[in-house]
Image (cartoon, rainbow, N blue to C red):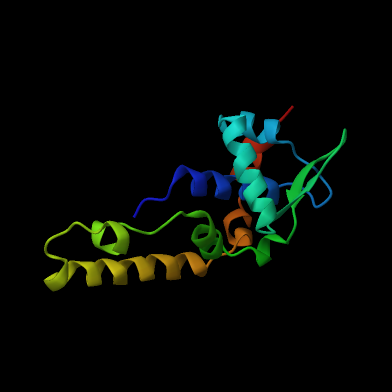
Length: 146
């Protein structure tokens, strides 16, 4: 299983915002520079995370973004499920574009479906809080000493 960059960057944005104080606003530019990710790509992700209710955006001269929920209320499995385009890890998972000739009698698709369910179950066992809790090393990456 491989997650798209879109989901990876979505999770990174949430981690970054979770490490900030509740009132601290961040900018897309700041996050893009920190992760060395395209600002334009992040704008799409920020927009989607806002639509999904994970972050809030404040417009204006002193605007920015911050989490809309507490880190403990943001489930990693849910974020992955909402940001991944599909979970077609093999052709037979895509009913519209399944060109595999062994699909009718193949048992592999069932094994892979079970593995995908296990993957998602593990992700659903974690929140954003779990990813940042007691992680001073991560915090120091974002707030290097002066």
